[in-house]
Length: 308
Image 1 (cartoon, rainbow, N blue to C red):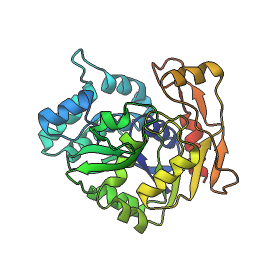
Image 2: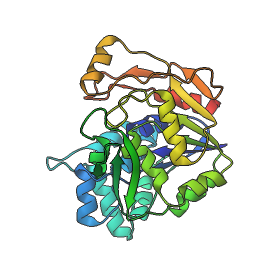
Image 3: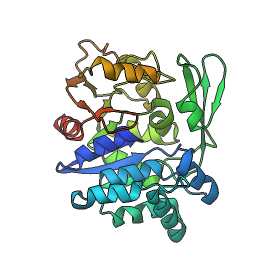
Image 4: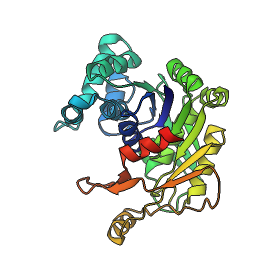
C-alpha cells in the first residue's frame, strides 16, 4: 500500500485529501501552523493552542464517507462570534489532553479519519516576510494579502524558530510519495518548509516528490507563471520535484474576469516539454462557493497522484 504524505494548508490540501481517501493508500496530512486570523487566531491567542482551522478542514476531508457531509457541516458550523464548532472541539481536546498534538489526535478519532492529520510543528510562531521594495509584512494575513498586486515577496521568516513535529518527520522519511499541495503560496504552503528540520527530513526521504501547481495567482505572486511557482517550491524545500501536476483546463471568460477583479489571474503553463510535467483536465467550477470557484476535482487529482 502506497504511503502518501501531503504537505499544505487550506482548500488545495482539502480537495486532494478528499480524492486520496478513496484509494488503497495510507494518507498522512501534514498541516501548516501559521494561521493567525479569525477563529484560529483568537483561539491561538486566548488558549495558547496551535491554530486549528486548517487541521479541521483536513479532518473533514478524510472523514468516513458515511458521515462525511453531516460531519463537515457540524465541524464547519460557525457561531455568531466567528468561531467554528470544529475549532472549539479541537481546542477543548487540546486542553483536556494537555497538548495540541494530542487534541488533534483525539479529534481525528471522533470523526473516524481515514489516515492521519499532523501539525507540521508543535511550536507556536509568527509568520513574517520581507518584500523586494524593503517592506516587512508581519502576520499571516499581511503575508497572504500584501497591499499592491505587484508586491514581490523575497523571504519568509518565523519568529521564534519552530521545529518539525516528530511524527511529521517520521511520516516524511517513511513516505513513498510526498505531495506539495496548491494553495496560498507564501501564507500556507511555503511556511511549512521554514520549519527547522523539514528540509533535512525531505532530503533524507527517498519518496517521489510531487508538486500540484496553483491554477490562479494572487497578491504576492500576481505575475507568476508555472515555472515561478516551481522555482519557489524547490527553493524552500531544497529538493527538485520529480513530478509537477498542472491542470490544463481553461475556464470561460466570465470566471477569468471574476478572478481578475480579485487581483488574480490564470497561471500560464510555461513548463514546455519538461518531462516531469503531467497535464490533465483536473478542475471544475464550483458555483455555490462564495469566492474561490475553480478547484481541483478530488476524484481526478487523487487518481493523478496515485497513478504517478
